[in-house]
Image (cartoon, rainbow, N blue to C red; front, side):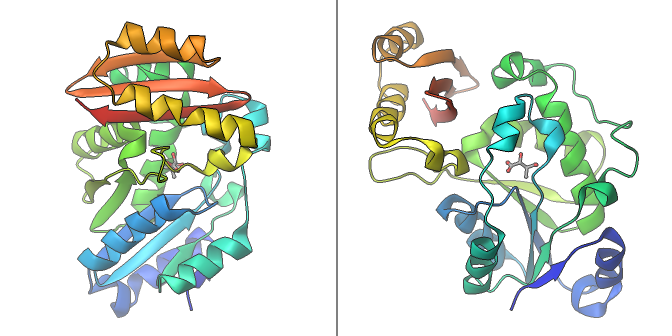
Length: 254
Ligand code: PAF
């Protein structure tokens, strides 16, 4: 059975025990509502390491849209059942006060790539992600931490932060898990209505086509999407669109 740890102090005690300190530790930070995408990170961590830690913390500071935070899916019982099936060793479930002892007065800030792509549309989002991930990495002190490629910009920024601050955890990306029709798995997908879910498949199809970014953008708009951006960067094509009230992001190698 996975062992839930609900406070930082408790986690620090576990970290000192020999069955934590003397083995290789893999870490998968999440915001819960676990799906196959998260499970693929967990499976990779279990393959590579002696023990695996998963954290669930819906980090309020990284939601720049209040209603997105309020509507973020949570189902802790379901998540724990999945973690037990995967035989995860530890679940870190910190509370807000424990994590934000500083009242979010101290932040990690990146001044370049965090303002591009999603950063242009979600002000402060990546600094909030970097801040929470820095806190979690410092608490968990894993050998390796795993992040999904669906959030490729997030992965690159976290990897850059780990290098910049000499953090002793290797940052590894794991390829995006997709539904049979190509839609990238995301906790937010369950908020799509039947018709929106059907329409959503147009997004990955166009993104991975050999059309130009502007052509893709026009076709998405014609199909009723609100488009934040379709842009190429460093050998990948990135996109963010809105379907009804749900914002979807994706990226593909080009
Ligand atoms: O990708 C996520 O689920 C979150 O951004 C993360 C990395 C757990 C930080 O809150």
